[in-house]
Image 1 (cartoon, helix red, strand yellow):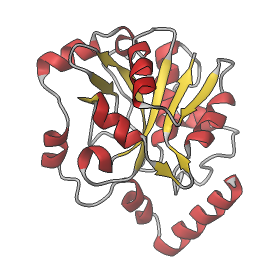
Image 2 (image 1 turned 60 degrees about the vertical axis):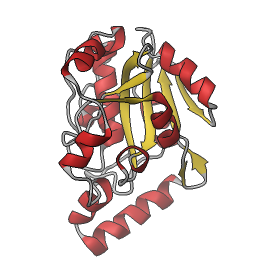
Image 3 (image 1 turned 90 degrees about the vertical axis):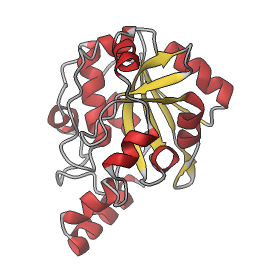
Length: 219
């Protein structure tokens, strides 16, 4: 399956050129105004979110994905930086793995591929969480404030921004009183944002091929 995806990606790149990656990773129609309207970035809530135990370990910094296809490796690199792993750049995460060897993850990485890539670079426990109920998702978001845990979420941007496709980003934590999740978006155009837990769950509870999207838990 992995090599089928690789060959398909090479074929797409060959036909459409490097610009195809940008089209696949950054869909047309998601304006800056729509991004601002779709999520919460009020200064007081952002300040509180960055002060959460896990978000604090990212030191108010997200290293942006280097191109529109590499949200997965960028999410791993940022997460590793927050927990003291050595591979804290996309290049280091991908080195000697066979993934994204062209420089692009042309059709993106699935949640399972992201888990495999993560396991190649850490001895920590890496668990794929999918087919979650809304209640199970809420419990995991509560636990996302536990410094011994890191979550990366795979969701469909369309469920948040009314346009877009699949994307990976680390979870910075959960403001329980407001019932909002802090997403450390690795795409510089979007930047970190807060969103209602139910909306994020619905954006995650979608299909990537024949399997549901979900969470990657590193602990």
